[in-house]
Length: 274
Image (tube, rainbow, N blue to C red):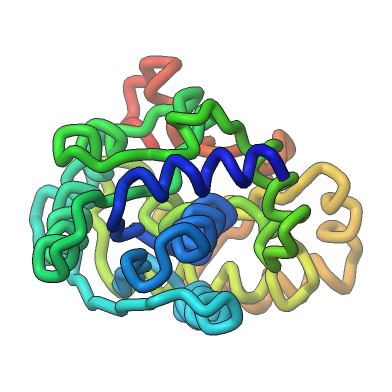
């Protein structure tokens, strides 16, 4: 519990905060600690958009209610910004900038000094242009400031009884689409529906990467045997074809965070992927 007390102490020093809250492991811990430390002077802002599945939003609201968070819900249309919709390698920068400007407005309206996110030290290991945007806007990352990594964050969350302590890692739906492929609400809905098929099968950590008429499925290596059994395989193919995918493939490398960023590292000639 020492780590949790350190987090609360840091937040208490801030006097008043607004947290960019998603209902994920990291932001939930920050939101809970801020609420414990500051009470009503801690506001959790949930931004609702087409980049986040309805199921994730519903779960975030339920968690906020269970934890007694002071929740504010705002709606955003990130695809209205062409620099987001065109989906170049800096997409996340433009999206984060727009979202946290909205969150900053909430802080200003309520006279709260700081805007926070849930970034941690492990986030520095992947390509995350959005981190530059939040840094430019003066957003603070208390988990990163304290040097907490994902393992510590899950351990703290488990120790204080947060329901999110073992929640699978998640990223916005745009991260399923290769850079250079324009984002549309139709595409994002297609991905959301495809991933709901896998979730209904009891899979926890997975992605459906969208390559035009091909769905490339990533699952944890231990889940591959389940996915390729005849009945499950046929079910997945049937359901995803009904959603508009012509080809359904299983990535034998398995699930990994930011797999579509690999093209950036390799300097591929094809459109780089996020």
